[in-house]
Picture 1 (spheres, rainbow, N blue to C red):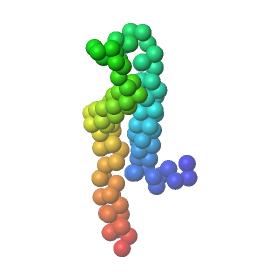
Picture 2 (cartoon, helix red, strand yellow):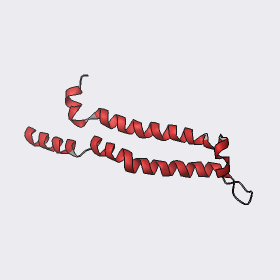
Picture 3 (cartoon, helix red, strand yellow):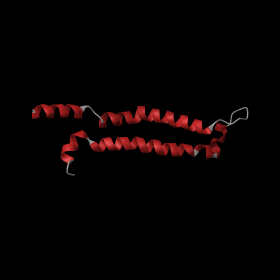
Length: 100
């Protein structure tokens, strides 16, 4: 709490929570997707018509990558826009000019 007053304009909590949100969501999402091939309801999606099986690991990785792209574009972009705003740069520039 020593630097709370000095750090308030920079919104460190918003920055911390937005980064942690991305890290935790992608981690738990990947763990959740790893269980999909083990469920009997989804076995038909992993069998091709000619009797061959698709590479499930590659499919899960591709699905996870696609979901991360969607989440970053539609969910976290708004959080990052607010947390990493240009406002603090303008605040720093005006503070520096006043001190000179």
